[in-house]
Amino acid sequence: MSQDEKALEHLEQRLAQALGARAALKTVEPAALGERLARVHAAAAGTPAGAAAATAPVVELPVAGEDDGGSPGERRRSRLLLAVVASAAAAAVIVAVALGAGHRDGRAPAPAATAQPSPSSSSSYPGEEWSAYPALAHAQWPSDLEGVAPLGPDVVAGSVRMLVQLGQVKYWAGRTASGVLCWRVVGPGVDQGGCLIDPATGRAPTARLVEVSDGSVAPRVWLVPAGATDAETEPLTAEGVVPYVHGVWVEASASPSSVDRYAQLRAAPTAADEKAAGFEYAGINAIVPGSLRLVHDGPEGTFVVGALPLGKLCFFEFQPGMAGSMCRTPQELAGEGVMVRTQDDSTTATAWFVPDDEDTSGWPALGREQLARNLWYRTEPPPTPEPVRSLTPEEEKAMTEQQPVVGQVVDRGTPAPDVVGLTQAEATWVLDRYHVPISEVTVRDAGSAPSGMVVRATPGADEWVPEGTGVHLVVAR
Image (cartoon, rainbow, N blue to C red; front, side, top):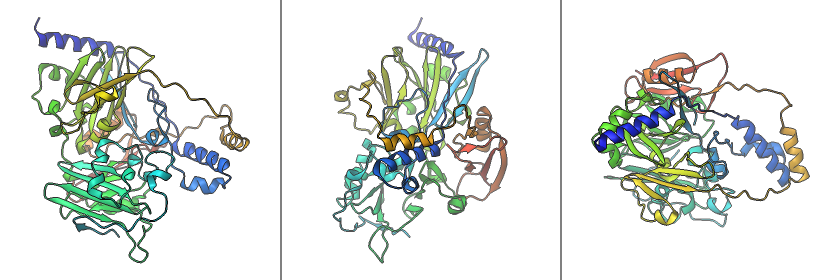
């Protein structure tokens, strides 16, 4: 038996073991959790609960099976979780949630720093200064640190976040010590930056939507805060700017595939890749044709990666008796990684899928092992629980007030999957697998967005679809 035949046989065994697997999805109401947390904090600090709730970040509990030990900023990020529920005939799919300003060339001078505490040092968890833009509210990743030098010394280093990379063009943003938001766009023939400053006061104005690039030298990118209304974002939709991740919108026509950034995805498909592509994965018909690759098959598990429109990637995992997937941006897969199952329940594991140009020279010192090109892995025992502090009387009272009535069942509906960037047919397929109906389809002009692309979905990703209603799709003409 040849080596390729052995690999195929092992892959078939892995996939066969996944048949019959069941994936449990646990959902929560983020708004209720955020309000509860705000009341607890307010009671502990002696401030009015209502005032605290008005600015408190929404915290989302992790989906069952994910790490619950991270910071609130790490837990709050929305996830597009695709769990494969296989049957004897074929794998069925559950798709779950896991998505003015001044421009000038050259470095944009930021206002002088003040004696106020920096956004980084005053935050209660990493990324809190980005709480209005949930996808940026996380600990810094290597891709974020690349933007510290381009943004310059007036921007607090710990506040810098990469917004998106479109081809070779990278977009970063950060804040000065006084809270002014600055950005930088760098790439071949591109060097643009700016700061959001009120000319009358020299300080940060109250802005809802922030244009990071106006399209003159690089594709358009906007920062859009959580809770932005359809009326606020309608002009963006009309111009073909669509949600990329929660808080960042990009020009749809300028969103290239991420395949070229990974040697494993650029390589010609092997027999094992073609065999893997023959199974019905979650969202299989939304995967960029020909992009599925078997990146690793070993004791750690069988891992397959495929590209999605708008540059995102789906990481598929197969273990004996289970299968699942997570779709994320390249920054997330290389920065935070993906939690994967292990054969030993007493350990946890993380896998990172890393672009070719990512500096991983220091990763072995962090206990990370390179399983294959672009793929790193680390196992570790579960963290030792920290001693639990007793609640103060004020905190206990605040928690008690927020407890639901015993036996009360609150049906918030169904969380919507992320379908922006897919074609109407692909979005329909995904929504059907998630048992979410389509209430209406509107075809309209949407700037340079490709014809047939879903440029808006209401409710959007991570938002609840009430029982008896559906999702309204807006499709580019």
